[in-house]
Length: 423
RNA sequence: GGAGGAAUGGCAGAGUGGUCGAAUGCGGCAGUCUUGAAAACUGUUGAGGGUCACACCUCCGGGGGUUCGAAUCCCUCUUCCUCCGCCA
Image (cartoon, rainbow, N blue to C red; front, side, top):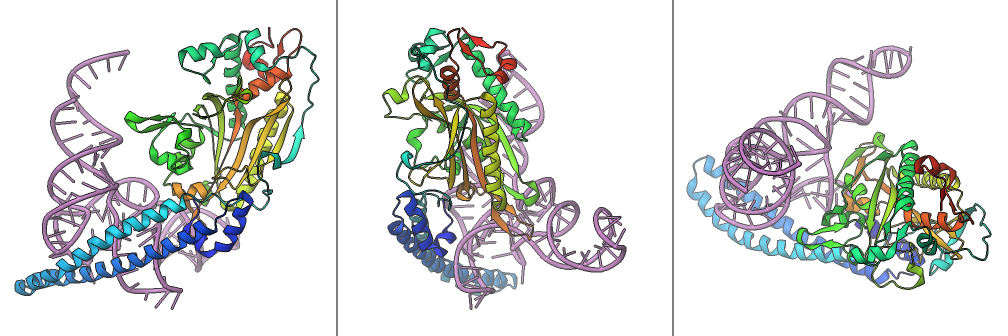
């Protein structure tokens, strides 16, 4: 959520910047400013009424103290009108504030200057690539075939127990999952991220804090009886660890990593693109989250990108990094880099990590602030990224490392797996 | 599940109807001293709204109520603590 003050002061700039998202902000910004004006006008009236009523109360108190009860009682009658008025104004104010809030929730984050223009993922800008795409033989298989062949992931079994999109990992498949999680967490903690195990369900306030609510609630599984949501990513509980917190500059950077399952409803997606591990309702992910001083958040973003590069380099997977264009950029993000690994057997790129700077967009909702060195209160910047999402990394390993003898495990994972071949 | 107690500023912790937005300590900031740092001392320092700036308004876990007036009294919800019970 953008700060109202920012909108007031930079109306034109914001409308202009949001064009990159193909978002016509002009009408909504105008509406916001109008509602803001209205809210302030009501607020002023209410303030004046309350001020008068406060004044009278004080006088009454003093009269009572000095024993002039009759005069005091006379004054009391005066206050009843004020009470009526302030009650009405208070209702109006609540309504006006709610209307304003509703509009504010609709405005996406302002894209960073480096975000390219564009309408869709076609227009994302490749900024880096590494690794070599292997040439596989005629009989190369997509990962879902490999999973079946080596009996390491059972999709049908998951359908029986739960439904589509809830795979069952078996044997070496399950072990490899565990190895990847341990390996990622080790890499992240080595880089200074503190490991946390957050709750897998969050309350409404947390959903609002990171921006999943009110808009994208259809994306999350909702446990109605307790009004809790299954997390779609560890970003939600981990970032919300510091909702309503006040830091000082020396506390930065704040760095967390956590492994969690992630739950996404992803309603309405069918076909080849959701085959196998490509898109699931439940999947594992190791996340990194940072809270930063505004001056250093982009350096932090670069650091996160380098960190993920390091991991993918060690896994020896062919990948590329995209800077998301305005049309593909997430609602809450100012700048996002997507990492994609090449799925050789499917002949397509699969997103395995998304690293973003949200600047103050989340912090504003979270009330995540700090006192700067001059004693002023400022909003912090929040960032997060996957390091990494498991299923597609697994798909990449299975497909790119398949040989006649079986699937070769990347060297760095062998100590974690205890085997070097799936056969 | 039963019985009590508690929730106050960045943190700790006073305050139980009328200049209380709130003592005090810590922390933060500024300064004195010092070659520098530490210590000590002095000053300053809650958040949000509002204003050109003041004024002014709101906020003492959330919501509601009593009262001319509520951090303070009542109801309710949430969370935490202690004791008992239950489960592991």
